[in-house]
Length: 241
Image (tube, rainbow, N blue to C red; front, top):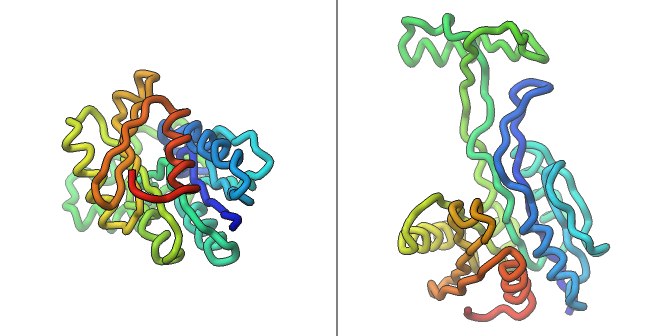
C-alpha cells in the first residue's frame, strides 16, 4: 500500500520588520536526506516537504516543495496539508523558533516603568506600527518577544492514525539527560519515535543521533546519512528498534 510522508525541515524565520528577521542554525540537510532515503522505496508515493526558503531541498521528484517563513505560515500549511491530503507519516525535523517578535521600543521609552507599564507601552507605542523598516539611526531598540504556537502537538490531533517522528535538540548534556528529555517529549506529544541529538555533535560535523521509541528502546546512529536511513526504515517497516 502506498504511503505519503510529511517532512518539515530547515529553520523558521521570524520577522522583526520587513527587511530584518530572527532565525536559527537549522539548514534542512537532514530533512532532505530523509526525503531522498524514503524516495528509494516504491511504497512511498508522495513526500510533502515543508521547508524554510534557504534550506536544503531533496533531489527526488517525489518531493512536493512547500516554502514557509515564520511559525504562523508553518502552522497554516501543516493544517492545510493534514486536512486536504492523505498523510501516513510525519517527520518533524524543522527547527521551529520558540519566540517571535511582538513589538519594538526604544530603551529610553521604558526607563523607570514597572512591568505592567512596560507591557502597556510595548502594545501602545510599538514602533513597528510606525515603520515598515526600523530606522538605522534608532539607538538601543528593545525587542519584546512572545512564544510561538507549539507545532509538534498538532500532528496527533490532526492525524490520529499516522506515525509521528519528533526531534529533540539539546546542547552539551549527558546521554541520560538527552534520552530522558526526548522521551518526555515523545510521551507528551504522543509521538511514535523521537530523534534525540546534542548540538555538540551536530557542530562537530559528525552528527550523532539516538532514535527512541515508546518503549524507550534506543537506536544509535552516526552521521546524517545513517540517521536518514534509520528513520526511513522505521517509516517503511515500523516495529520496535
